[in-house]
Amino acid sequence: QVQLVESGGGLVQAGGSLRLSCAASGRISSINTMGWYRQAPGKQRELVAAITSGGSTNYAGSVKGRFTISRDNAKNTVNLQMNSLKPEDTAIYYCHLRQSFGIGTMEYWGQGTQVTVSS
Image (cartoon, rainbow, N blue to C red; front, side, top):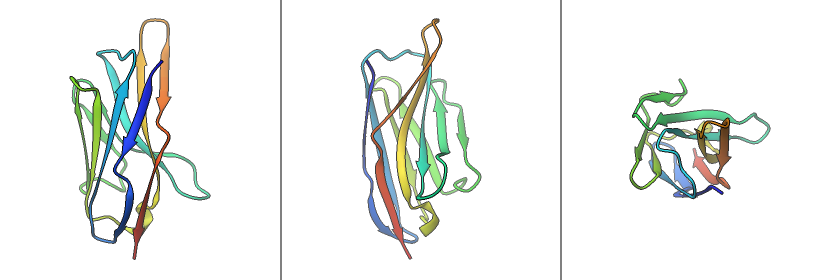
């Protein structure tokens, strides 16, 4: 079984910064994609940023230039550095892992961490 444990959410003023971290444990493939999604009240869950085990990244347009995703393959961790935060970044942020072992693609989610940006 795979577990994702997030940390680092909280309350910050607009313009401030936060760093989210996620540690994956269990049966982890050396080839996978880890990332962060978020869900604001009344809205659908959306991709924030993702990074492959090879280092390729993908960002939502709304966070490009403000957020940076990184990972440590040896530790199976992924981080999201969030700068210049805006009130519209307020949401529950979920860590996500997608991987395949030849029997199909499997996805896992963390429990979520609240990020609140005050104006």
